[in-house]
Length: 286
Image 1: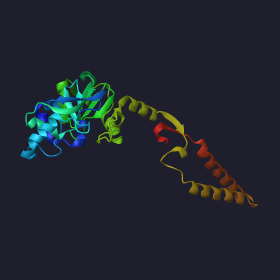
Image 2 (image 1 turned 90 degrees about the vertical axis):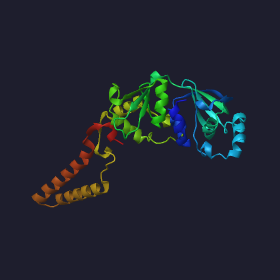
Image 3 (image 1 turned 180 degrees about the horizontal axis):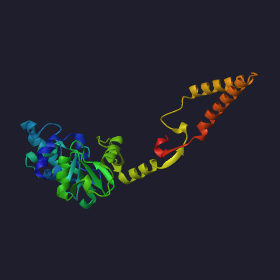
Image 4 (image 1 turned 30 degrees about the horizontal axis):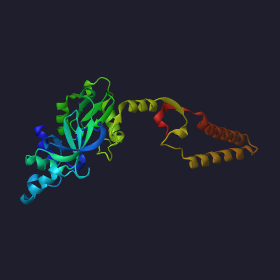
């Protein structure tokens, strides 16, 4: 196990353990019982550190952790075979305890998981140090690299390359992609392990943006979120039309001309809302 990880795992929170690595694993088969060397397991001291265990309980606890499998709720470790490490999903705190007492194995349920080849993954360093580290799979699928100090050590040892956004030719503007990540809240801890809840499909996002930017025609009442004040509009036009028709009935040239003018203006206002068309990006229409 990478030496720096042994110290850091004492500071991991329970919900962050599955996020130490990117959620691109492919679990294989059913979990089985096995004796696992704690030196190869990433756990978390969530119920106190090993030295907090009362001395009179140490022997019994070592025996229980070393021999009792129980159910998957007691100790379940995911074995990322290509990476050569285990990550504890259940039974996290016993990892540091057994390691501190130089115990050779923990009785645990093991779930094997495959992992993408290092050539398929790219770690992307943020241009602004305040932004999140990212990782990209197959030049298309992007995830936020959570706990980068730990994940990078593992992935670096695995052979994954780290680069900057500007050094990857086919990528669009970094700010645009990060905005999409923030809009979908992918930078926040995910509530599920589903890949769709953690991943930005760059190809699908660009296709959606291209569709939204297509030019199309629409009328003034399609300018969402803006809308005509129909009540005011109708009242004004009705008053103008009524006044125009009323003036036409008077036997005076000026009133007839004024009335015809008002009727014409009102008719023009009514027709303009149907005849006038705008052109612009598709996304304007909502």
